Image 1: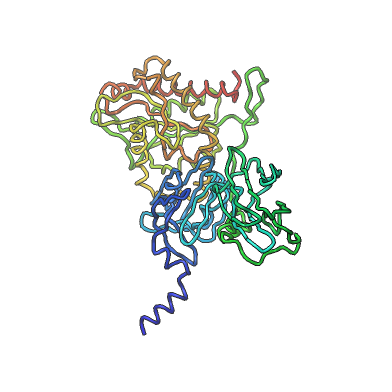
Image 2: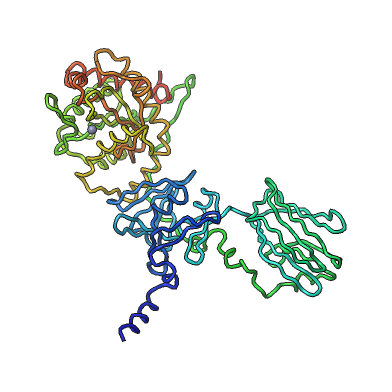
Length: 527
Ligand SMILES: [Zn+2]
């Protein structure tokens, strides 16, 4: 009784593919078995472990388990998947999936259809299908032999052809017909013997950028033609050929099932674009030197972000002010310097209060900042580590040490809910793409001016002072943004300078001069 009831319920609720999947989905890439990934079923949809699957497909992945979000990047595209949403962000556009992304344990599961999205297939230059419970990745072919048919008075060879692949045919000699498909990508080479009176054999091969079909005719091959018939490309050859219109064969070609899946899954065809409240940064007039200086309607706005604060002291060492205090002191000097230069300037905190990391970038965006500088003090276990560094954000850290610094600065996350909203994530990804280059330039100017500024007394290493790391506070800022590590509180030499009042003022001014120099170089202010 129990068993019967279970079977009944199972039949009712479990999708057909369940028996195949059983929590694992196989992945085949270019004909090779690449093992399996965790999967689950929900509402008739198969969901795959997003991280494992993306990695198998050669993507890079940032997993934010606490935020139930994952960022997947393939060449030329990225996607942000957030549980429990069915909307995915792909290159700053929203795309709807057939069901929600699901977070389970430390894994994020995404509907398998995500990997079949045209954007993903295009980025990977692969054809991706879900067949018989497996994810199948194949060459992005435009031509494939699908089927042969041998009749009494003729033979037919059928081909799948995608898009506008053209061809030319010619009778090479009495026994040989060739068709050339310029620019076609063949699914796989094939060589088939029919050994009848119409076709002895044929072969289809990729020849560099073209595909060549070669048919060896039999003794009764009186007529032949290659043409589109009922949506397929058909080579017909025989003693008498069937009329074109009446020739629709009732038989489905063997691979029809597979080929039906080619292209965009229809489920997305009517996927609605979500209305995302995205605020793009106001375009900045960029002037090249020599061009007349445009009169800005408003002053440029600079946000200075003194790192840490309140319950988060940042780096600490005996014999020194806490990092949060040093950061604020120098930030105030920087503030005064930039004010004097005529900018609108805002501090994310001007006293010893706690501000979340997300709150800082949000503040900058609401202020419509043109530039963002986060001010920090470094620390290392290695007492010898010293020097000034300026970071801009990228997914890749310059080296393990830079990644460590980022991890440390990101630790403030523990004080807040490690969660960015859907929109925050969208803004983040946009910001990074748009401003990474500018941020790296800004970093260069700041490095140069801190180096030139006398009296600071902290080493600025030309080769090593500009670094890349994935800082949370720089994510989402819709402006060129850098994070300055003024020096190492763990280095006795740096510590003395960091706590020196004159050096603090110089540090603020050095950073300020770098900012001004950058804005001039970029034509954002007059020289
Ligand atoms: Zn810090």
